[in-house]
Image (tube, rainbow, N blue to C red):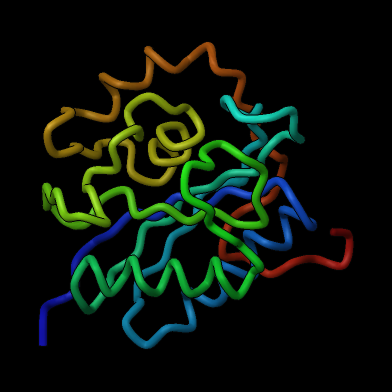
Length: 176
């Protein structure tokens, strides 16, 4: 059995009640026996990047300990996406989705596998990843990219807006 690794996962959705999609995905991830020490960021609203005309996204990032390997965590994330109605189609990038979960980091690993690249290849270019990461782990060092604090200025103009009082991993309130 492998020892637990600190992993970071990005969450995004812009279809079918995005806030509920993110919260349900977090709850399903937290419920897995391999997961411990889950910490979720605030929820953020972001404009879509590329793709067809579509609604804004809700995004968040979570830190967790995973007792398994990176590909097992990827499989768990893909299963949660599928349960949420996510349909992946070849060649479709930046399209609207019920749920998107990306494995950003897995310990200090740098992996280039056929179906998984860590660190996530575009994480250093996206405010909707870096800003929530900075909220939960401000001193994070990203293998091959450097410090999170060094990367943040390059994405400062991407128009990310926090949603007041909303955090990933917290239950929906009656007011939601």
